[in-house]
Length: 168
Image 1: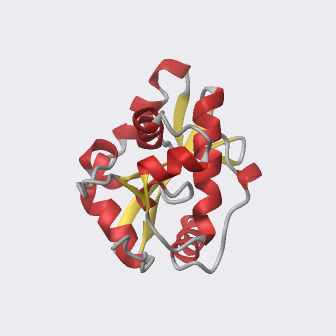
Image 2: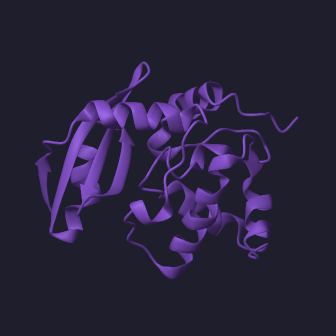
Image 3: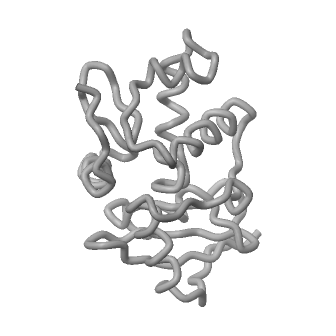
C-alpha cells in the first residue's frame, strides 16, 4: 500500500494530507510534524511518498470547507477502523454543515450510545482526518479543551475560523 502525502497551507496554518488511491485518508496539523503520517501508518506496511498533486487545489478546498462554502462527500474519504469507530466518524462528518459545538455526552446520545461517552470521546480523539471530520466541534462538559496530541491551539483556531457558536 502506498500513501501519498503533501503539505497544504490553509490560511496561516499548514496541514499534512494523505491519500490512498486518490481518496483522502489522513489530515494532520504540521504542529504534529511530518512524522505523524508515518507514525499513523506504521503498522499497516505502508510506503509513504511525497505526492505530486497540486497543493493549491487542496489549499482552496480546505479553506472553503473551513469557511462553510464547500463540503466533501463521505465517499471521497478512506477510513480504516472498527465498525464503532467508522460509525462515530461518519456521524461526526455529518456535522460539517452545523456551525456549533456539542458535548461528548450529547454526541454519544445522538449516536444511540448514551452510556459510552468515554469510548466515543476516545474514538473522536483517534480521528485521522482532521477538519473534514470535525472533531474540533465536540468538547467536554467541564469545558477543558482536549485535542489530538494536545494540539489545543489548532482546535481553538478552527473553532474561531469557523465562527463556531458557543455552548453557553
